[in-house]
Amino acid sequence: PLHSLQACPPLPPQGRSGASAEWGAHRQACADDQDAEADAERLKDSQNTAAILTTYNEIDMTGIIELRNRYKDAFLKKHEIKLGFMSAFVAASAKALQEFPVVNAVIDGDDIVYRDYCDVSVAVSSPTGLVVPVLRDVQDMSFSQIEAAINRYGLKAASGSLALEDMAGGTFTISNGGVFGSMMSTPIVNQPQSAILGMHATMDRAYVVNGKVEVRPIMYVALSYDHRIVDGREAVSFLKSIKLKVEDPARMLLDL
Image (cartoon, rainbow, N blue to C red):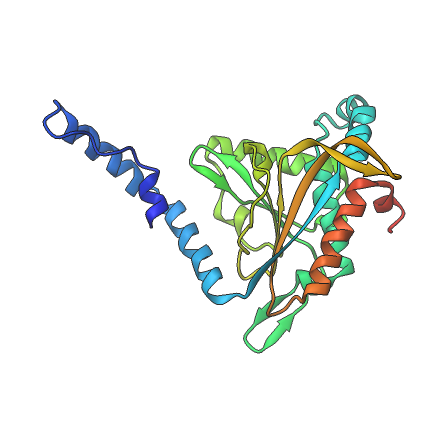
């Protein structure tokens, strides 16, 4: 694919000493990235097969930032793991998946298979790029358990020790382009899943609160979904449910 070629260095000018050997080494390094090529083919198959649409929303991160600042030291002392924002999005997604089970479902031939568990694929960085290990039974996990699992997978990804079974399955995916500074994107559904949540960078923006303009930390979020199984009303309502839960985490405690 064209984007894969662009990742390689430009061809050195003819006649430069050692140029052909240097270029050959770079070409080999790019060609060896078989995992990335397989991912690209799978995502392209998703585009060709699914009817992918994307809906967007914005999240005022003030509440979750204040919660983290208030409890991060106590959380670290008790659980020996740092409190991040990803656990809130994973927990909110699990709650929303239970509210809208079709987003957690999958097309199997002529049938729609509904799952009573939430296995959330979370993108983490590795030396060879992003990998997507799966957090199993997230609906039964606490914030500390989610953070511990993400940290464990992050360490395995950094050391290159992730196993295939760590990345197999998954009923829903969360991708965070915000760690690289992305403001907005249109994520591709990771089939056979039916939806994917895209998180982005949190930026200070002008935001209307109770009729007054204030500066608030805002994150744009995107939900891409397979319109063959998920309709627009369900997709928009699902994303709004995540928004409300992250903006006011007490909703997750009260099951709202």
